[in-house]
Image (cartoon, rainbow, N blue to C red; front, side, top):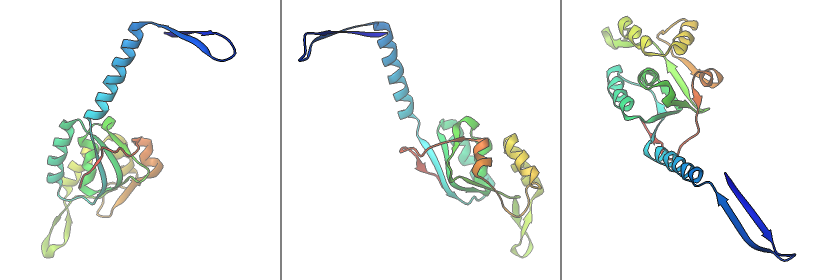
Length: 174
């Protein structure tokens, strides 16, 4: 504990300031500060802000690398379609959402005859199984993954993921 004894020499000022302190405490405090500074500096964050998705396999590959990197994911805008695989690929405690976060979910599809989209039931089931339980329950309450997009945002999303604030180290991930 830091303690100080102040000696007053009169009405004008202080004669001397005599500090005595517990060196173990000061050393420990400095070690913690340095440790925390090192942790913050060594882990960058990936920012997702305008990702409309794409092929599932591409995102699975991309997010496997992100999972092993230890980086934090900041969802700060649209993350739709295959982008939402991030929810199952990266540990829950390494994902945070801002007030702008907007997750869009729909059934997986393939190009069918005449270029029309045809729902791929097995890929849709695989996609659904990747999501954490609270997200699965939210999707199920809305009728499941269908061809049309459903959006998870605002208070509902904030109740499932911790809020975050934009980090100067964040980089855009598309």
